[in-house]
Structures are given as C-alpha cells and as structure tokens.
Image 1 (cartoon, one colour):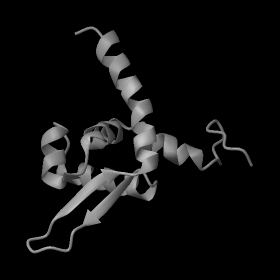
Image 2 (tube, rainbow, N blue to C red; image 1 turned 45 degrees about the vertical axis):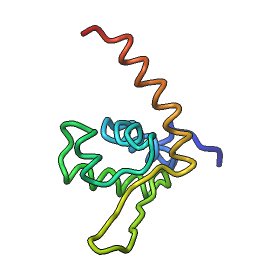
Image 3 (spheres, one colour; image 1 turned 90 degrees about the horizontal axis):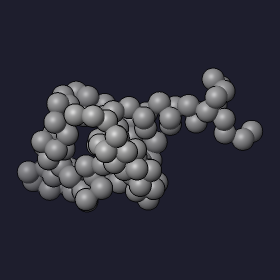
Image 4 (tube, helix red, strand yellow; image 1 turned 30 degrees about the vertical axis):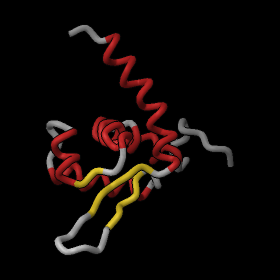
Amino acid sequence: MKPDVMSARCSSRRYLATLTSKWSILIVNALGQGPLRNGELLRKVEGISQKMLTQTLQELAALNIVVRNDRQTIPPHVDYQLTELGHSFRKQANSLIRWVESSVPE
C-alpha cells in the first residue's frame, strides 16, 4: 500500500506526528552542525525539559532520524547525531524554520 498520511491506518502518520512536533524540529536543527551531548542540546534548545528531550530523542531514534552514540568511556560520554535520513529531514525542516522566522511578525 502506498503511504498516505491522510489515512488513519497509515504508519506515515507516526512519522508526521513525531517530526512536526516543535521539539523534534528544534532538536534536528540543533544536531545539524554535528553530534551533541545531552547537556549541549539542553542549552541549544531553550525551554525544553530534560524529560521532553529524552522522550523526543528516543522517538527520533526509533524513526531512524537520530542515532545515540555511547562512547563506552569513563566518565560516560554519550552523544546524538543525525542519520542520513535525519539530514534529509533537516533540509526540509530548515525551509519551514526560515519561512517562520521571515514571515511571522515580531
């Protein structure tokens, strides 16, 4: 069956719902410059709680947008980066971000 986001039964709805959340778009945008650690993401994405950051990163990882890298070091070093699919999404999301920034009055 061809993907159809208008169909309630289509799995593409899950992608659409996750990717269009404000936190997902902002996290993906922040990761566009390269891998970031949890604390770095918290500082870059102002206003996000630790709980929401963790939840959104898990959702993005489940959709193969983000990958979690555990460097297996002491002290622990975990970072997150975009997958190839994530970079593809970021290009589209950036178009929306730039449109919002230039079109919405102050």
